[in-house]
Image 1 (cartoon, rainbow, N blue to C red):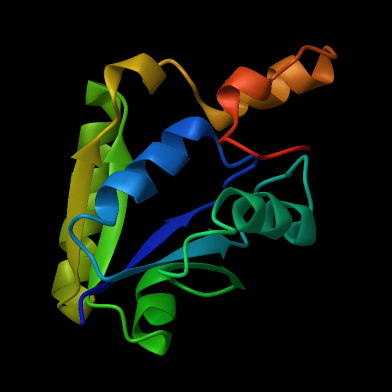
Image 2: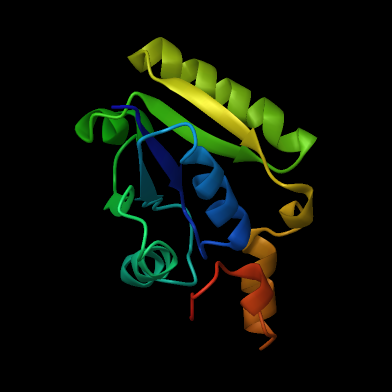
Length: 150
């Protein structure tokens, strides 16, 4: 079985994230979305709400699970017996960061990182921009996965 984790803060989980996971299901048998706890990041949504959003998005997809973790990503991957880390790239600026982290993870653990490019229709969507829209009371339904309500 090919199992991958898709790690991130997901504050909130957007339609861009959703698209990466959906496309990743053509490569992996199972994807565990790992909601990472980062004590240096102030999040808009607490862990339970971020978990709820992801569970809403994948309510009808048994090959996707979501979990909260508070460790190094490679340690989380090992704990759930994942052989791959799935990541999405929106911009060229993301590439260097993801390459550095992916190389480090592979050296430390042997776990490979698989990168999918974000679909161009979603490349402008980020969790940061979505949080900004929320703070101004804007409708963000177009930025969220189908069937997700915040």
